[in-house]
Image (cartoon, rainbow, N blue to C red):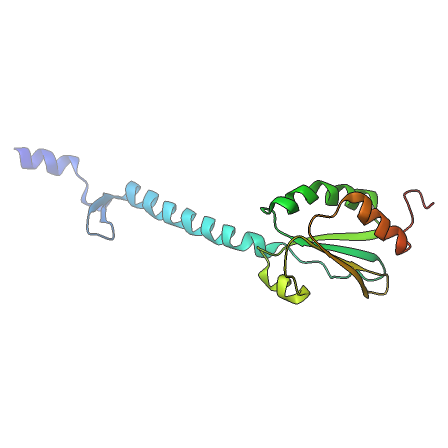
Length: 157
């Protein structure tokens, strides 16, 4: 009698087994496969995030360029981040200001010969390196360098 009750309540077609041979219903199996697929997708996406950030051409053709090589997690680099953001807005179209995270893009540190971060490299309009600074650099110093390189002030003055 117990066997008949179990047989009536249990549909054999809905049973499958996991990788360790444990019995699973089709619903549980589907959830297991979906969870594995979601985990694989998340790992693939997070592994590619930092590499998907395209490195723009350095120096920018035809513009005075400052490239700031640092890392999002380094303290002096964090102190420079708002300055870089302000300068990018203020000098848009007149100078190119580029930040490259060398902890995410390690090959760029070698490319530019970086020994410490942050490092700022300045290029003239022709693309020739004209200056380099290692460490925190305040906004006033960056603006002064842009002026020496002939970048017009805001409003074309």
